[in-house]
Amino acid sequence: MALGPHLRRPILLAAALVATAAASPAQADRCDDIAKELKNQIDGLKISVNTGNMIYLTHPAAKELSLGCRGRNYSNELYAKTDRKPKPQFFELVASAGAIIFTIPKPDVATGSSRCIKRMGILRGDKVSMRFRRLNMECTRTKTEASIVVTRGKDE
Image (tube, rainbow, N blue to C red; front, side, top):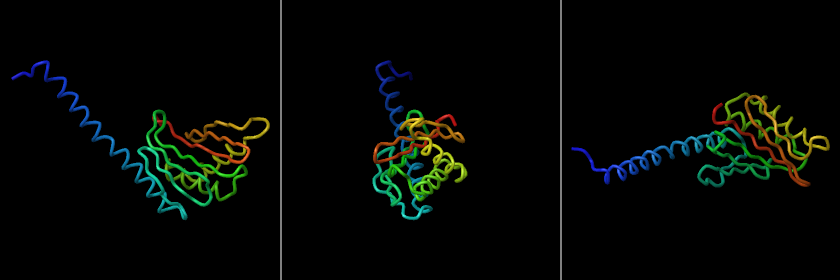
Protein backbone atom coordinates (compact mmCIF):
# COMPACT_ATOMS: atom_id res chain seq x y z
CA MET A 1 0.00 0.00 0.00
CA ALA A 2 1.55 3.29 -1.11
CA LEU A 3 1.26 6.48 0.89
CA GLY A 4 -0.43 9.41 -0.73
CA PRO A 5 1.56 12.57 -1.45
CA HIS A 6 -0.23 14.39 1.38
CA LEU A 7 1.26 11.90 3.94
CA ARG A 8 4.81 11.50 2.61
CA ARG A 9 6.05 14.97 3.46
CA PRO A 10 5.00 14.98 7.16
CA ILE A 11 6.49 11.53 7.67
CA LEU A 12 9.81 12.60 6.11
CA LEU A 13 9.89 15.77 8.21
CA ALA A 14 9.23 13.79 11.39
CA ALA A 15 11.99 11.34 10.50
CA ALA A 16 14.43 14.22 9.88
CA LEU A 17 13.57 15.80 13.25
CA VAL A 18 14.11 12.50 15.06
CA ALA A 19 17.47 12.03 13.32
CA THR A 20 18.74 15.51 14.25
CA ALA A 21 17.52 15.19 17.83
CA ALA A 22 19.37 11.90 18.15
CA ALA A 23 22.58 13.38 16.70
CA SER A 24 22.73 16.52 18.86
CA PRO A 25 23.30 14.93 22.29
CA ALA A 26 26.33 13.02 20.98
CA GLN A 27 28.15 16.30 20.32
CA ALA A 28 27.16 17.72 23.68
CA ASP A 29 28.27 14.55 25.43
CA ARG A 30 31.68 14.71 23.73
CA CYS A 31 32.04 18.34 24.77
CA ASP A 32 31.03 17.52 28.35
CA ASP A 33 33.54 14.67 28.38
CA ILE A 34 36.33 17.03 27.31
CA ALA A 35 35.32 19.53 30.02
CA LYS A 36 35.33 16.82 32.69
CA GLU A 37 38.73 15.62 31.52
CA LEU A 38 40.06 19.18 31.72
CA LYS A 39 38.67 19.51 35.25
CA ASN A 40 40.26 16.22 36.34
CA GLN A 41 43.70 16.89 34.85
CA ILE A 42 44.23 20.62 35.49
CA ASP A 43 44.49 21.76 39.11
CA GLY A 44 42.25 24.69 40.03
CA LEU A 45 40.01 24.40 36.95
CA LYS A 46 36.25 24.47 37.55
CA ILE A 47 33.29 24.09 35.22
CA SER A 48 30.95 27.02 35.74
CA VAL A 49 28.23 27.22 33.04
CA ASN A 50 27.22 24.94 30.17
CA THR A 51 25.28 26.69 27.40
CA GLY A 52 24.69 24.46 24.41
CA ASN A 53 27.93 24.37 22.48
CA MET A 54 29.94 26.57 24.91
CA ILE A 55 31.21 25.52 28.31
CA TYR A 56 32.56 28.30 30.51
CA LEU A 57 35.40 27.39 32.82
CA THR A 58 37.19 29.21 35.63
CA HIS A 59 40.83 29.12 36.66
CA PRO A 60 42.96 31.50 38.77
CA ALA A 61 45.47 32.06 35.93
CA ALA A 62 42.83 33.33 33.46
CA LYS A 63 40.20 36.08 33.60
CA GLU A 64 37.97 34.19 31.16
CA LEU A 65 38.20 30.63 29.88
CA SER A 66 35.82 28.70 27.67
CA LEU A 67 35.55 25.56 25.58
CA GLY A 68 33.54 25.71 22.37
CA CYS A 69 32.33 22.61 20.57
CA ARG A 70 31.29 22.28 16.95
CA GLY A 71 30.98 25.67 15.34
CA ARG A 72 30.42 26.30 11.64
CA ASN A 73 34.13 26.30 10.78
CA TYR A 74 35.80 24.49 13.66
CA SER A 75 35.57 21.24 15.58
CA ASN A 76 36.77 22.54 18.98
CA GLU A 77 37.72 25.96 20.31
CA LEU A 78 39.67 27.13 23.36
CA TYR A 79 39.30 30.77 24.41
CA ALA A 80 41.41 32.28 27.18
CA LYS A 81 41.80 35.86 28.40
CA THR A 82 44.30 37.32 30.88
CA ASP A 83 46.16 40.53 31.73
CA ARG A 84 48.05 42.39 28.99
CA LYS A 85 51.34 40.82 30.12
CA PRO A 86 50.54 37.11 30.58
CA LYS A 87 52.20 35.23 33.39
CA PRO A 88 53.86 31.81 32.92
CA GLN A 89 50.88 30.17 34.69
CA PHE A 90 48.62 31.40 31.87
CA PHE A 91 50.81 29.82 29.20
CA GLU A 92 50.91 26.61 31.24
CA LEU A 93 47.10 26.59 31.48
CA VAL A 94 46.64 27.16 27.72
CA ALA A 95 49.21 24.48 26.90
CA SER A 96 47.62 21.91 29.22
CA ALA A 97 44.08 22.62 28.05
CA GLY A 98 45.08 22.70 24.38
CA ALA A 99 46.92 19.39 24.66
CA ILE A 100 43.84 17.72 26.14
CA ILE A 101 41.30 19.30 23.78
CA PHE A 102 43.23 18.89 20.52
CA THR A 103 45.17 15.72 21.46
CA ILE A 104 48.58 17.04 20.46
CA PRO A 105 51.77 17.30 22.56
CA LYS A 106 51.73 19.95 25.28
CA PRO A 107 55.04 21.57 24.17
CA ASP A 108 53.56 22.22 20.70
CA VAL A 109 50.58 24.10 22.14
CA ALA A 110 52.87 26.00 24.54
CA THR A 111 55.18 27.06 21.71
CA GLY A 112 52.35 28.13 19.43
CA SER A 113 50.42 30.09 22.04
CA SER A 114 53.48 31.90 23.37
CA ARG A 115 54.58 32.82 19.83
CA CYS A 116 51.16 34.17 19.01
CA ILE A 117 50.90 36.33 22.12
CA LYS A 118 54.50 37.55 21.94
CA ARG A 119 54.14 38.59 18.26
CA MET A 120 51.67 41.32 19.16
CA GLY A 121 53.32 44.69 19.33
CA ILE A 122 54.26 47.81 17.41
CA LEU A 123 55.22 46.06 14.17
CA ARG A 124 52.41 43.50 13.86
CA GLY A 125 49.63 45.30 15.73
CA ASP A 126 47.21 44.21 18.41
CA LYS A 127 45.67 41.33 16.44
CA VAL A 128 47.76 38.40 15.23
CA SER A 129 46.51 35.31 13.41
CA MET A 130 48.78 32.36 12.84
CA ARG A 131 48.78 28.65 12.19
CA PHE A 132 50.95 26.23 14.16
CA ARG A 133 50.84 22.40 14.08
CA ARG A 134 47.39 22.27 12.41
CA LEU A 135 45.96 24.70 14.98
CA ASN A 136 44.61 28.14 14.12
CA MET A 137 45.52 30.76 16.71
CA GLU A 138 44.23 34.29 16.94
CA CYS A 139 45.61 36.62 19.58
CA THR A 140 44.22 40.05 20.40
CA ARG A 141 45.01 42.61 23.04
CA THR A 142 43.62 45.82 24.42
CA LYS A 143 45.17 48.30 26.81
CA THR A 144 44.46 46.03 29.78
CA GLU A 145 43.89 42.49 28.47
CA ALA A 146 45.24 39.87 26.07
CA SER A 147 43.32 36.89 24.72
CA ILE A 148 43.94 33.85 22.57
CA VAL A 149 41.55 31.68 20.58
CA VAL A 150 42.83 28.27 19.53
CA THR A 151 40.75 26.30 17.02
CA ARG A 152 41.09 23.34 14.72
CA GLY A 153 39.19 23.22 11.44
CA LYS A 154 36.45 20.67 10.89
CA ASP A 155 38.32 18.94 8.08
CA GLU A 156 41.48 18.31 10.14
